[in-house]
Amino acid sequence: MDKDNKRALTHYLIIVSLALAFLVVGNRVVGYTPEERDSNANVYRARVTSVVSEQEHVSGDEIWRSIVLEAEITEKGERRGDRVQFTQNVRGHFLERFPRAAQAGDRVMLGVSPQGTWNFIDYVRVHQIIILGGIFVALILIFGRIKGFNALLALGLTAGAVFLVFIPSIFEGRNIYLSSIIVCVYTVLVTLFIINGVSKKTAAAIAGCLGGVVAAGLITFIMNTSMMLTGITQSESIHLLHLTATPINLNAIIFAGIIIGAVGAIMDMAVSVSSSLWEIKIKKPDTDFGEIFTSGLQIGKDILGSNINTLILAYIGSSLTIILIFLGFDVSIFRLMNRELVIVELLKAIVGSFGIFLTMPLTAFVCAVLYTRKKEEVIEIYSPFD
Image: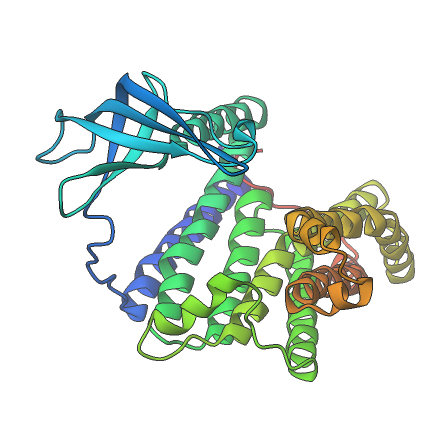
């Protein structure tokens, strides 16, 4: 291994170590310990072994079936291996629109009442997700190889920051605005340094990305205040006010959701511009500041449309069910657009788009400064695994 690769490997190991240290220290600083709750004490996983009986009922226009089944408890604990009988009620005007009746071999969630009566709660679906996720990871590793591994590592560290630091900080009553910004900065640094290595290209992308995130945060804060949002976008939101001793700031949750949701698209823009301009500088070392900056703007404009479409369509897709419900009940477009749930989704899309747009010239400017600072031959330090 030559000197440059050794240096790159050292940088890589330091970055990963610091990222892991942040998760450990951050989690301890937050100091959140989940309270033991008994809400799941009477819920068990089980596998259906047979159908005992089935009866159909008609009440007015409604058709429903009551099915008694036998199942074996698979949940770890004292009841594991027990055979129990439970009831599943399939209701509705159109039975085919509801989950089918349980059959032998199905994995289900069962609840038991204090009187010892067992009832169907839901199907166990997580196994399919695990299988699909495993296939995805395998494909990433097969085709992406070490780059794919680094992408998954960065994803895992980002998820760790959210679930080990950010969410616990909310329950501990920490400043949500500050916590969300810290998580975004951590995500940008860890993702770009691990995937792209330590280089001018990465530094330019980080600068542009952080600028876009800050701009998105400022716009969100201003709009959040000026539109007098309550933070209660759906019925479940009200429960957040009673989860902790101090009510959770729902407006801050909106802020966090917007900037955390936008950081991925903003990173995409920053990396695309900085990488493209780096290739130009490599192929034509005598490119000056003006040429690099102008090229960055042109490249950014070509990328801008697809990135904004991706972001907005993602938010539209996530809100499609609610939009259909409102329109199905003949709610006017103005009333629909004025509902806080829709307003927040629109705010996410527009603010994210602003972040992408502002990231483009900022990244191009930083690239022009960094790539033309020295006139000697450009030397790049790549990730040690390229």
